[in-house]
Amino acid sequence: MPLRISAEVELLSLINDYIKEAVPAQLQPLLPLAQLVAEELVVNVASYAYTEHVGELEIDCGMVSFDGQNMLYLTVRDWGPAYNPFYEAKTPDLTLGMDERPIGGLGIHMVKQMSAHHWYIRDKDSNLVGVYIEPAA
Amino acid sequence: MQCTISKTNDLVRIDLCGRMDATTASSFVTTCQEQIDEGGVKLLVDLAGVEYMSSAGLRGILTVLKVSKAKNVSIGFCAPQPMVSEVFKISGFNTMMPIFSSAEDAQGKL
Image (cartoon, rainbow over all chains, first blue to last red):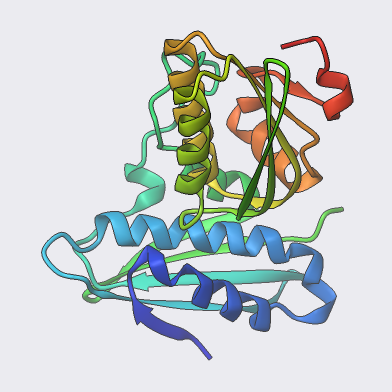
């Protein structure tokens, strides 16, 4: 069952607890990755989706069989203006040295790197982002 | 996340324990900033107790790296767990800052 809460970074522990309950026993090794992906997506919503008020987000997590392979799925929905983070977020230059590196901008990059598949749809008045995380080969 | 400080000669060692995420990374930055302000010239951050790190943790580390450089403080990190090592690798941080396998390995190299 999805978790719907206020889009505030301070509520991250609630999301971590939800993910911990939602990840099935056979995919427990993926728990840190699932929590990482959830945190990055939630921080993204908390930072960009609502500028004039604190809105809500809905997160869902569970197991899915994808072409016969068991994977974790994770979705995050918000009701802010249309925003595809996978398209809008700049690709960071990982070759830059410390002096040239901007602070931040790595969250969505990490989501992409940690997931097997990622997707976005504008669903009526909401943004829905999803990822699939697969077990290590 | 807990930060434990120990000092030997000119080396300040900061042992971190717990999760380095969007709600805790700022305490790491504050701790490092305090040690730099108190005159620390060599900082070793022991990550052996850090079980989880997100991009917020990386943001905190980059902030500390920039402050350290501005203040001529030498800083290194040691003993990351596999999850943290993976985060360093996919973000390119593994080639941007000194990371030692252990606190012992860092001796004399900062």
